[in-house]
Image (cartoon, rainbow, N blue to C red; front, side, top):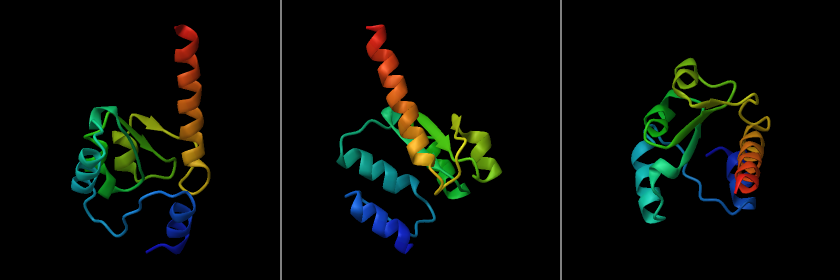
Amino acid sequence: INPVVKSRTTKLHLECVHGLKEKKQVLIDWAHAHEIDLTDAIYIGNDVNDLSSMKIVGCSVAVQDAHPEVLKNADIILTKSGGQGAIRELCDMLIKKMGEKTHES
């Protein structure tokens, strides 16, 4: 378990699963348990073990320093690398998009 990730997810009160080679089934089970339609989900990844999960969600996102295959399969490629503000960049994009939709109504 990465102690930095564990500390951060604990601080943010987020669920965290470590050491998975195949993440897709865990994602499916998690979405089902939380009644989330995967077509409404965003998945952010950086390595080849994220590809199968990225392919089943509505929007796949890759960090700037992701594996080349992940970059090829992403709907959105962030300008930030993992651990360098990528999640913040994605959140800012979502907030901006939500604001635009509010102003359209």
